[in-house]
Image (tube, rainbow, N blue to C red):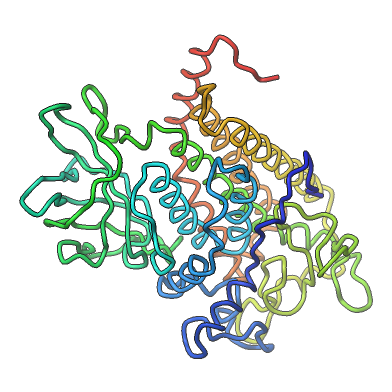
Amino acid sequence: MYTASHGITWHAHRITWHEVVLMATSVTTAGPFDIPLDVPPGADPDRALPADLSDPTRTGAALGVLVESGRLDPPLSAAGSTAARWRVLADLAVNDVTLARLAAGHAGAVAILNDLDGPVPRRDQRWGVWDIDTPVSPLAARWGPDGWTLHGARPACSGARVLTHALVAAEITTAEAGEARQLFAVRLDDRGIAVAAGGRASRAMAGADTATVLFDGARAVAVGGPAETSGRSATAATAYSDRPVFWHAAAGVAACWFGGAIGVARPLFAAGRLDRTDHEGRSGYEGRSDHEGRSDHEDWTVHHGSVSGSANRYGATGRGGPGGHHWFADRRGRPLDARALVHLGRVDALLMAGRCVLETAAREIDADPGDTGGSARRRALQVRAAVETCATEVIDLVGRALGPGPLCSDRGYARRVADLGFHLRHSHVEHDLETLANAVLDDLDPFWW
């Protein structure tokens, strides 16, 4: 279905969900990843593989495994293999949007530090980028005898207790530039940093441990130069967000949305093939196996496989609740009706469109990493808008086609849908579209074709 094209090697940096688990269990024999790959019938579905990372401790352990393995290092954006980097994020998001979100944050921080000649992250460090201010208590930086310190609060910090370091932007006042915003690197174990009490009402992306972080004299290291904020909003750009690498990373977030959409779509494709199941109980939607169980339909890791058993490649745990109930069992002998098939066709077209958008953007970034053409910002907004539409419609169409069955009976799948919907709300939607429209009108050649 989603075959590679244009000479891009999409599988060069592929990482699978099982690899994360196997690497983690090779590090410790009695830890947060010491879980079976298969869950016996009747076992607790929360122990099944797709539902593991709703606990921030486990999410942090998984992220640590990825960082230490080097899977999130190569390639940096605009280093000639942008597609491969985005593929890593999409692969992760197929099974767990939360882990992909934190992985994207770490990879983005590494790219920013590399671009601004900042400190080089070690393999035992987990980084994030926190750049959302609050009008009540904007983050401010002060210079003193011991260097820079940060004061104030920063809301919506993903990985608040999971990460080890973060890049944060804060307001400064200098004699040369007046009021400006400066990017800083901080260690999250600093005694001047604390996580605010209270939690989020939503359980979506609970594994990301998103919270408000309080800074009270936290030591910080400046990264790059300041950006003037005269006449700009409280969320005005820092020096790095005026650089191409920021917009390349912003476009890469859409790869997480795309992978999440594939994960949501899996049960619909599986249900559509139940009437073609062979005598061994395997799904007919496996394609022609070429090597190591991969299908000729795969591109951005649409993992096909058995619709029975635990943790199958469609993301269904195989057991939706106590007693081993499987929501697919209710559909056997009832192939999708015409209405559902229409939705399936629409989902397939949307995923193809999303893939093409990401492929095109990756090629353009690698062809002009320094953004000499000045298109990085507009391209990032285009990619995010297109893939956000794709993912949003996939969630809606799959729900219309299958009804509440998988959401009620498969806790891992229900969490996956909730996590993706929550993550999509980071797209800024209409604000970004307004910005994109102005960019189009400012361009004499919209280069749509």
